[in-house]
Length: 402
Image 1 (spheres, rainbow, N blue to C red):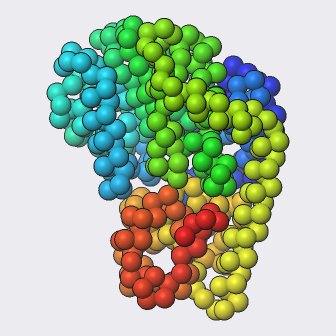
Image 2: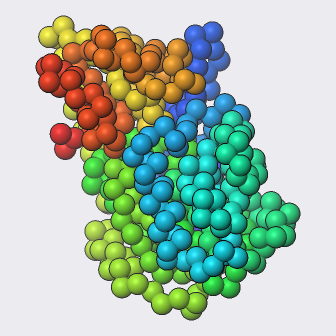
Image 3: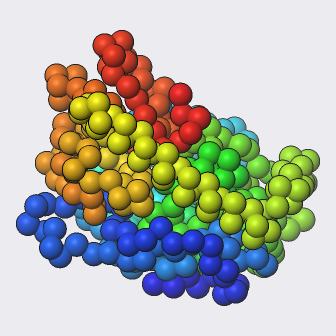
């Protein structure tokens, strides 16, 4: 599919080569039928929007066997509890205020509002995670969010105080349709709050693994302001986050309904100064990606020359980009350790590395371990502290990882 954002003048930056569905963990018998697409990224100069230039159909990514569960990380559970508490404190005035979460997954964040007796609605297209949220007693619609969907939500239309999302808005190809739907649901003083991996952090860390099929956009403050301004919304506040190796929380409202935080212009100015609208910045990022690829392969080859056994840790969506871009397969990495039942016993997308239960990491650890969940390294290092104490070595494609 092609992106259908308002501005179609997208300048291509680089290709990461043929890429499978990032969460498409597969059985041995399905290897010959695996789907691949050319993963290229570009920049819309007028909007400052960094984006995939093409991507698979969304139904191929989000479905009844979607293998990601928000509740699987203690850190993220705490993060979403604090996120929900912050929303309630800052924007909810009484129990008559309504909240909608777009992309609610298994309801990890939404259940905090239920506990506070605030009327809420969750929307998620993946049937398996939506069922878990429903089983918690939450009000859930199993569907993709769209302007058409909002026409059936009469009890929320023009009455919703907060629409929120986390690591979801970058998944939605049609931002025009998204914002029109939000506009129909929000009350006059309603706010739209979402957080996403931050473009500035991705560039600084050279964390190109943030780029995969579900991440159609990597947002900056500039791009958020420019896109939403087209629909008479303005960016009124912004909050840097440490999640996902560096994220940003954006708060938007109808123009002239709220005063704008000084932080907004400060961060916008910093982005302009760093060249977020300048294609040269992204060409430097491209070179850094290629250098990172070479460095990671050097680290792996050095371990192999020393007859070290190499494993991977955390079968994340991001691991698909690393493995396929760097041409790393089961000839170099024995297995990937993971906790997700839906992934254990399957092969990683494209690279076809076996995924095994993370309990095996304690029993028979590798000599060297490539940590794909590098953004959760503190949580993982604490959980697997004996690995390093016994001489194991962690590596990552992130240069300043340790």
